[in-house]
Image (cartoon, rainbow, N blue to C red):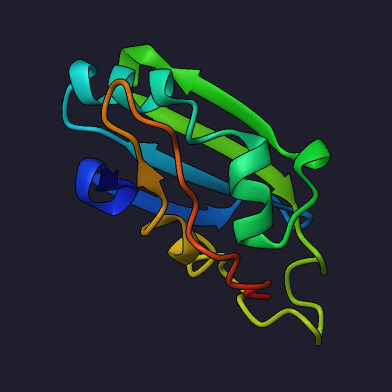
Length: 118
């Protein structure tokens, strides 16, 4: 098994408007992208608990031409709200770095949910 942070060339989160955050996971090559997608380890059901987000509100897209996985979800508070602790949305990806991606023929295993980072 390898951590997502070891396989991805870049993992980032950012604002996608005042009510939405988006996460981009980019890979250096098609083989790694396909391995991660085929593992089933990056889905709303697996990333939702890590991010403190209901999996039902996460939209996920696997975009092969860019070797990237992208997902978006609603912010708990709108950008700039007094309760919003990450105005740029740039710190929300952190719990995903340690998500374990199984090698072919092994079962996925998640790290413990770290709670909400908002």
